[in-house]
Length: 262
Image 1 (cartoon, rainbow, N blue to C red):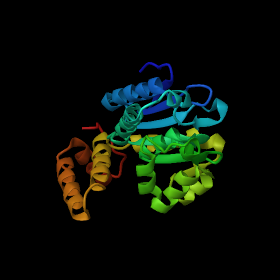
Image 2 (image 1 turned 45 degrees about the vertical axis):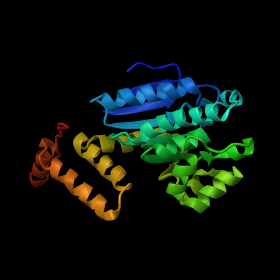
Image 3 (image 1 turned 30 degrees about the vertical axis):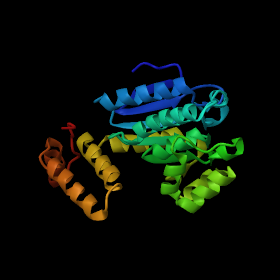
């Protein structure tokens, strides 16, 4: 895959590293968002990619500093505002719906649209110097790329209200405590640990990874009983796969499985 103007992609051992690189603070303008959508569309179709890491170019100590304020200033009507919000939501929802695991590696400041972006990722690993927030309220606006919805679902409505209504920043350690991120690692170790974690996942069957992602994502939309029924149907499908036969045989034979992703 070739690099785009603001989105860089590197593939190594079936792990794609997607880097947002829009100096000075990786603000997400319309073009960056479109490039992000195009990149994830290609990765979804790339059989050589099983796991995706998304991070920010950290030269200016920023993961993503939110949406581009200059574009926000140009908005004049409710219709224009709604259209921008829906476009942003569409791109971020596209990432959330990926059947391949998406890991956010948050290297530093992650606010506004950046925080909304990581909320849609399937797992989140943060540098110990990372900072998080939804500061839109201080600009007289609200989160528009899904922040009011996903943040409340992830950390609970009370904590989401606190972050959204005050606009306060929190540390990586506090983000871990409230469940906003899954791991906090030393700053210099972030990409190494994220890549190691991703490669461990990528060693599994792509078929099983896809079904597991689907079962979790779809199950959360259903009652427990409906979710269990959905899980059983997917389990039924996977027992007919070559990877299931290989995985079981390898376990019995006490060897490492050699999955063919079929």
